[in-house]
Length: 133
Image 1 (cartoon, one colour):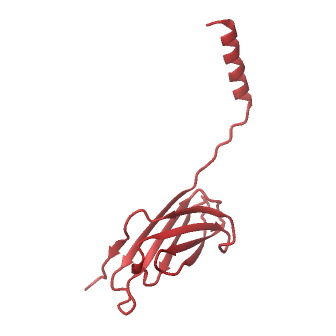
Image 2: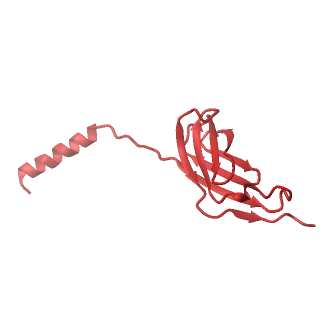
C-alpha cells in the first residue's frame, strides 16, 4: 500500500473514533386477537385484542386505540413498566364480525398524544370454546 492510502485510512479511523455514535432503539409491537365463542349468545362473540409493545418510555402512560374493520373503535390505557413495556388487552364486544384489528399506540392518556407504534394482528384470531364441566 502506498503512503497516501495508509494516511487516508488512518485519518478516517481517527475521525470515526472521535465522533459520537448514536444508537436508536426500535419499537417492537405484537398484536394478537382471541374470539371467545358463545361469550354473548344474544349479540355474538366477544374478542380480546392483546397488545404488547417494547421500547417505550419507562413508567409512562400510553393509550392503545383498537380499530376493528367491522366494529366500532375502542381505547384502552395502561402504564409501561420500569423497562418500557406496554401490555394491555382491548375488549371488543361482538368482535367476531371483524377480521382485522388495527392498533395505534399514543403517548399519554388519550389519542391526542404522539403516535408511537402501530400494527395489527398478523393471523386469524384464535378461537376459544367455553369451558364445560
